[in-house]
Image (cartoon, rainbow, N blue to C red; front, side, top):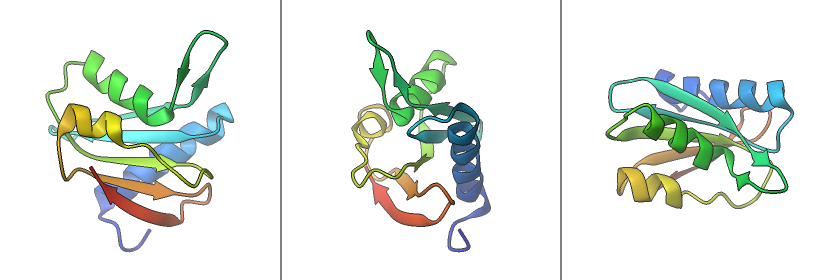
Length: 110
């Protein structure tokens, strides 16, 4: 994570911790334009399925956030859908994609 800013590295750490604590498939964290962070995990129930990133954005929205600066997703999946960030926060928002050990695999932009 040495190439990441301290703030983006914190997002990866929060996403990793959330994933580990819940033993979920994914963990995610977002940072709003005021610097506050929101972390979430995958929800996979019979009636509701949300990716960790979708839930993290929903948590931020439910707190009254007006925009996002960055996001991180910790997953072993090859593909990460960043559309929820794009739809809420617009273009060019960095989304760090890391594996379970925190190794950054990619930084995608919405």
